[in-house]
Amino acid sequence: MGDIPIVYTLTVCPACDLLRDTWRREGIQYEERRVDQSQDTLDEALDYGDSVPIIVYPDGKVEIGFQGQTG
Image (cartoon, rainbow, N blue to C red):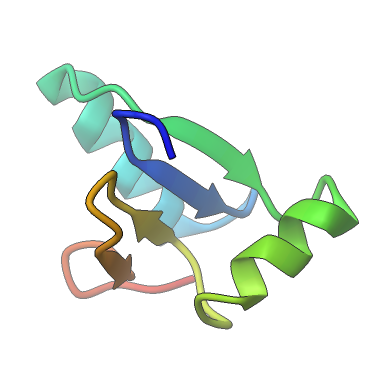
């Protein structure tokens, strides 16, 4: 795993939009993987949970949702 979070998202998802907008505004770098654009990416995300956004931090911590919202 790299040194920035990996975020699994959907293209149309209010919680994912909130995460993208907030982190962009705060200058937080991350790698976005859209689960609706690749079966392999969806399969990866399902290892962590079945709701988005899924944030996988470099230390291995996993967070489902963003600011109490899921998509």
